[in-house]
Length: 115
Length: 114
Image 1 (spheres, rainbow over the protein chains, first blue to last red):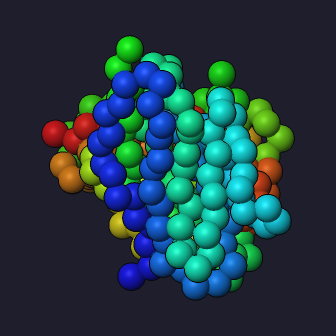
Image 2: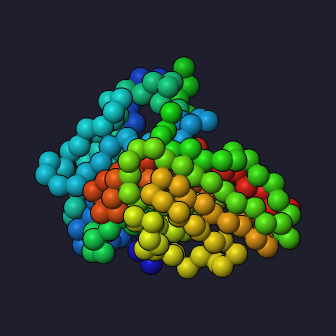
Image 3: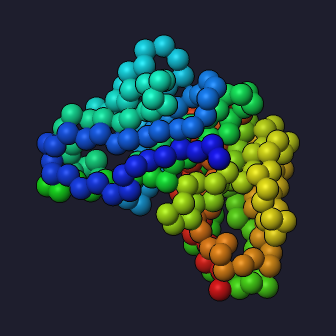
């Protein structure tokens, strides 16, 4: 079945460490790609998105993600994490073959940043 | 503030009860969605409405009945639920249903079915 895979369910880092969260999808056609974040006690919110153009996209709070089409991947990165980055991160893919919004989410990665 | 408001925040109901979840958005969006978030599972799309018309029913059991009276309001009517329906139910909206417009989520309703 077509899906979105996030390989790390839990990640624990110290402040200032570098972060990379993996995301792979199995859709073969054109896709729009998203990372959403959910801070403790808050709603899901958009972190960054990729539709077309430069495969390296920058989002809020110093996050970036790289779309590698050949690898069907859209990994999230941040060079130096902060305690306030503690949250759950969700990769989401919208297959464009239907022409409308049908986001498919990964299972999420819980990131804990220790001060 | 998300711009998408869901009530109630928490709901406990028996299997024979009838209850409704409410979602309201004042973002001027035309598309609204219900998602189900269960532990250790991906968010599952349940229903999509575009300009008040249901455009997607993702094989959801009939004990879940959505209603969209206008572009700003979305309801999820619940009846004769099962314990496995316990989950966080998220409402979202987007400018339109084309895949370029990001979703704006509410805080969710935590539902427990006893």
